[in-house]
Amino acid sequence: MKQGFIGFGNLAKAVYRGLKEEKNMEFAYFDLSRKEVNIPYFEEMGHLLVFADVIWLTVKPQDLGNVLTRLKQHDISGKTIVSPVAGKPIAYIEQFLGKEQRVVRIMPNLAMAYRKSVTAFATNQPGNREAMKIYELLGKLGKVVELEESGFDLFTSVFGSGPAFILAFIQIFKDKMQEFNLPGSLLDELLLELTRGTTDYFAQNQQQYSIEELIQNITSKGGTTQAGLEYFRTHEIGKHFEGVLDAARDRSAEMSRNGNG
Ligand SMILES: NC(=O)c1ccc[n+]([C@@H]2O[C@H](COP(=O)([O-])OP(=O)(O)OC[C@H]3O[C@@H](n4cnc5c(N)ncnc54)[C@H](OP(=O)(O)O)[C@@H]3O)[C@@H](O)[C@H]2O)c1
Figure 1 (tube, rainbow, N blue to C red):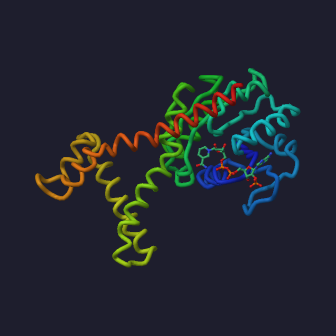
Figure 2 (figure 1 turned 90 degrees about the vertical axis):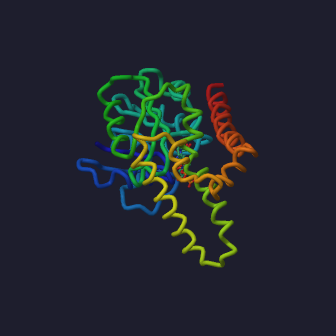
Figure 3 (figure 1 turned 180 degrees about the vertical axis):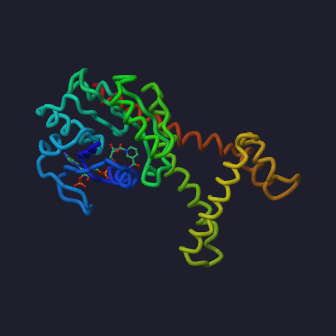
């Protein structure tokens, strides 16, 4: 399968890293400038389109309109368009390329590079063999779930932006540890181990216990965790954090509306 990227930034790089060891896979890209990557670079978009079976629209939302305007000047029938572009529905892409064009919309995150993304999938050709090939490909890059497009805004806030929010939380832990005067790199290692230990604990017990029960298991009556959790609940930290997810979801919805207009 020949993967062609239009725009070779962070996300294209993550897809490439995640897939580069796969058999029978070739890669190339078109971008405004050559990037530091050892795959063919096409200076003309048209040349990439001749090469590729699958065309990844890996550009920022504000650049998508320009790219689609150029794309529609070429014959890309039979090829599959994959768009990870936040807030841009399939209908937006169809306005340029027509309803016959096979489009797969996805919402992944950068953990694709380590095959640990959680990716939402929607297509205008459900059940189509080529579209399902993309579904299978995404399964190699982590977990994939087929979703109505109406769910993409919420999904984007949790799983697309989620890594940034979890890291922002970890940064709070790190800031708190500054008073120990440990080197930053050691702090990062310690926090990484904390995160890994927590995800392992979650992974090994999640079939038997709810998250609430897992929290209870590390909370002794009158102890330190309980004191912290009480503060968490009294000050409605969870509710405030929901505000973070709501803001991201609302922004995604806003971008979708602009995209349709
Ligand atoms: N990053 C994430 O975690 C993530 C997660 C989910 C979805 N997404 C979606 O993935 C898309 C790409 O995000 P990204 O983080 O990879 O962005 P990025 O790092 O900014 O990469 C975009 C690339 O496209 C190039 N470009 C801009 N205009 C172009 C044009 N007209 N033709 C060809 N190439 C062009 C840029 O070149 P220059 O560098 O020269 O400007 C850059 O190399 C976005 O729409 C985003 O919503 C990203």
